Length: 235
Image 1 (cartoon, rainbow, N blue to C red):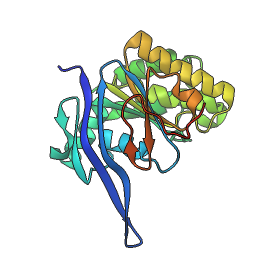
Image 2: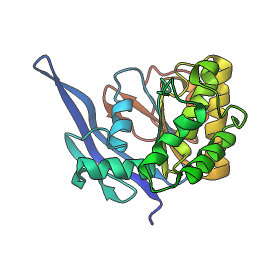
Image 3: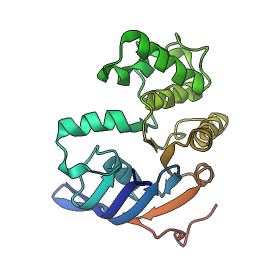
Image 4: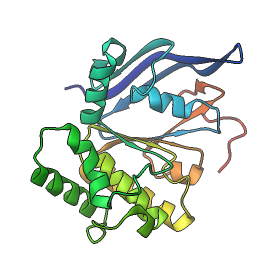
């Protein structure tokens, strides 16, 4: 399999809002290679989350092409996309998206219910994922019994439990205090360096971005060339 995990060319996404066309992403070109940890930086409305959602096939491009793990996502049906995403993509959201009435273990187990694994096997995989993120002693805790940082670790464990090829993080530290954010970023770095996980992280925070091995900037829907930063960008 090629080392290119994501290949986008001329990727464009527009929306119609109140009869006006809004260009969210304008002709983006990007290659993501296996084992990279890339941060997509930019202010709100710059197109970074749109690019992430297109990579996860959570949305369809208006024009341009994107292949992920060798698959042309536009050629897949919605059912095929859902199955492909569950196998290959782990997604970490800013708002955790945990189910309050389920324990940490049950939340992490959820993606495995779409597989053919037996209950005991699902339990083992979910337990292993929670131990990996340092929550082996919180298996039976509910989200309300966890700190924000612990909730995000549960969310990361849920994203990892299927052993995905690509982990996508949308502002994973946006709802965390500074210490919890540092812990989560350290965990993502560990997953990348020690376990070889390919990670693409959206953030507006320069300090978060510098945990990645590569930073790409977006500005007003444009993905800037590698190494280029907006003129007004400062640390």
